[in-house]
Image (cartoon, rainbow over all chains, first blue to last red; front, side):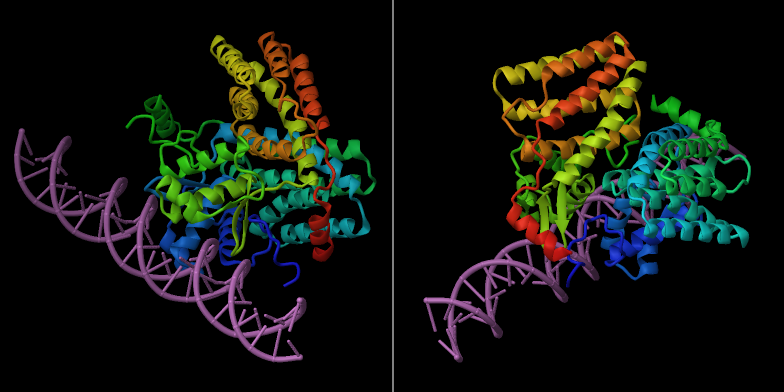
Length: 235
Length: 235
DNA sequence: TGTGCGCGGATTGTATAAAGTTTCGCCTGT
DNA sequence: ACAGGCGAAACTTTATACAATCCGCGCACA
């Protein structure tokens, strides 16, 4: 009972059961196995993970707070379907936060961290080489999380986790071509800049990386029929 | 049943009971009526609001996600006690985000919004005049939230809500003198800049405002005895 | 034939009960 | 007198039972 006692609610390790559920569902969403709009029934999930609805509920509520699940009263939980407006907000926030994060990451440069980053790049390349799209999209997001962890700024890390998760849904919904989700080459360039402690290059590369991702999106209001209707009637 | 149907989990209106609990506890914490470290027993709160522990529990979990409550496994929920390191992170994040928020707010300038801002300044002054410290500290935070709402950027708004709530605790714990929590004069200056659509002035004033708040803090590890001990034994 | 109403199944929201863990007091032994 | 440990009470955690709500199907009626 040494280090396990102090764990925040946002605990990264899946020690308790609700975390296992949350991370399982999160992974499924981030790997695009669960598509936006999919109903996440409580009994259904509970049976999968061998847990009662109580635990499933808390996990779903956490996911709702992270913005990747919508809970509609008396209707249940659904995988979120970000609007184009949401998408623009998410990427604007990322453009604001992530350059600052890489800047901080450079303060923490050490052989251990460089090794971890390189290791991650290798995994990304391997996934891409064997055509594992699901692993690719997951690892692309995790690269950004890794840089945030390196920065040592827990608040930025928390914010970025939300933004990454939403980005994954956004890319799935609005990507124009089937280009690789998030260029590994860009990531390699960012790592190189971090390694050289070149703050300006790192910030600039992160920014252009984000811009390129967003540029590949087609952010026009989708399924105009139903959504227009909803807006009109809602107003 | 027109406009009420579409409400996010983070619903601003206190329509359902869990929201009422959450907002009640939040207000108590933000007004410094509940001090850091205070135990928030489920039965206790449930009896106050006439709700079962189930509802109290979900409310507390939401507050934990916002960072103003800590839930320790098998021990219960406590009002969070941010460390000096947390404080520095919170203010750094605010310095990054809030200037951008005022910039966006200027895009939304309209007579309605200006009126709301002025109205808010009036309330702040009145609270300060009658020496209502609790209302003052609450309104100070709400000013920043109001600007974020004005910006129309829901993600920034969500992030800022968290940061404001934590800031309130930080100010309570680490304020040097008993200076007014958050100068109303500064707020008036920011409103003036917004009104004139002077982006640079607005950003600059927001930044210096945040710097002055942080400058009034004494961010050294507090209660050296117990915390040092915890850190040493934890490592 | 098309529309509207009502009932039944299913699912979520809430409360309560059972189970597990921690904490504090008390008691015994040295 | 004091340290250590046992035990009960209080609390959180988890599970389950009950109530409320929603959705879809079918029937009646125009």
